[in-house]
Length: 290
Image (cartoon, rainbow, N blue to C red; front, side, top):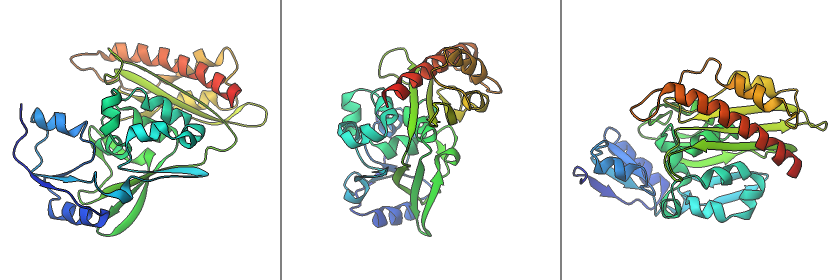
């Protein structure tokens, strides 16, 4: 199929892109790599009347590593995968990126594009929450910073205003001893996840967990934290052989799993329990290697 007719703009600065967003706030769409939006347009699931291509905006493509990591919204996923400094500080991000589509998709797809698209089955929104990222947006009223916990609202919907542009994703310095795990299940490698989990844990000097984040994705209208599972990890050691199963049992508490024509809610619930157990086991290994 072919997309519906649209106007195309290629701004060279973030300010110009914001101006175009103001002009086309009702039916305009920002495009970067286009790996998510273009297929939806071809199937007429999305019908923007204007595309604002930020792929040529150099100021949106930078990567800065100084304690934390700041990644421009238009930075290509493949480039982030090649950055050793990012891998050293954010191994969870790198592990998740390897599950995003295929090399050709990652060569075009961008960090900010995946996050702003807010597909509930996508890996990067869950990772942003698991790592406590902040999303920097620019609009006609200036710049504001949105915690990842507050950014994803429902299917393909975020806290961005219609005339705001995501310009940067800031990951804080993990500091100290930080364990992590990532698992997902899909029909084939590169497919959208039917269920997935990202786990992070900050560990104290004694190896016990001081804070944890267990983020589920692909199971509802937006990624969500499993509060009961996080609480079970705090005060325990990831190396405790009984912990993974106990956290897995807690992970589905209070969670509403969605059904669709391809996957039942019951399947997703069972899958999440298994994936959380494996991710917690992986976190014990990454703590030992840190």
